[in-house]
Amino acid sequence: MSWVFALLGLVFGSFANVLVHRLPRRESIVWPGSRCPHCGAAIRWYDNLPLLSWMMLAGRCRHCAAAIGWRYPLLEGVMALSWGGLAWHFGMQWLLLQGLVLSFLLWTLSVIDLETGLLPDALTLPGMAAGLLLAWSTGRLQDCLLGMLAGYGLFWLIGWLYLKATGQEGMGHGDYKLLAMLGAFLGWQALPFIIFFSSLTGAVVGGLVLMRRGAGWRAELPFGPYLAAAGMIWFVWHDSLLNWYLGWMAPVP
Ligand SMILES: [Zn+2]
Image (tube, rainbow, N blue to C red; front, side):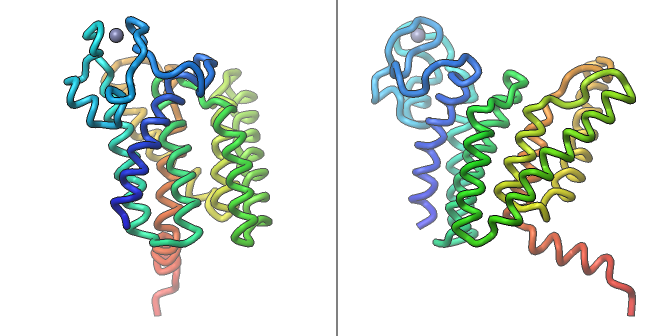
């Protein structure tokens, strides 16, 4: 069954590419149909197949031969891998649906954040609603509602303290809403791990990038992808993580 979900992942990866291109530009996501951003020529359905068309066209527009970015096949590929992997890991159960929705939102948001530094409300707000709806269907509404509010509140508080201490904004408000969305999907129990893991990886990777670029610490680096990675790791492996942590903390007999 996993391959069916991998194929579906390709299709939704293609849709994710549309969102990545249009949401930050505030364009409609349903109309008009796909166009080449370089020459404006309409893209026919046979040139718009996930992965296949990009390879057939060797990564160039059929009309003007402008390069089509690597992001298109890459996002379709990782979506196919994610959805196939989730189906293989979880099998047919409610959790799978939750994972598919969450991974779609997280990949789309991460790529938008990397490209533009934005985390559009048009994704995070419906994402919170979807998270709560799925939580309600699995009887976890209380945990997840609390997770959403605590997620937003925690980052708001950290942001406020940071502003007081340094006189500048440390995080974007989009990051608050992304953590709230993760809380709505995963429950408040996920928040400590997400904050710990994302800050740690963000600091390490950010530090390496800044060292290479030689830029000052003020340079704005997107934080969304680290939150997204932490959220997805928690979603798939939280049982093992908790067992490992509890085993670590248990007193030696
Ligand atoms: Zn073109």
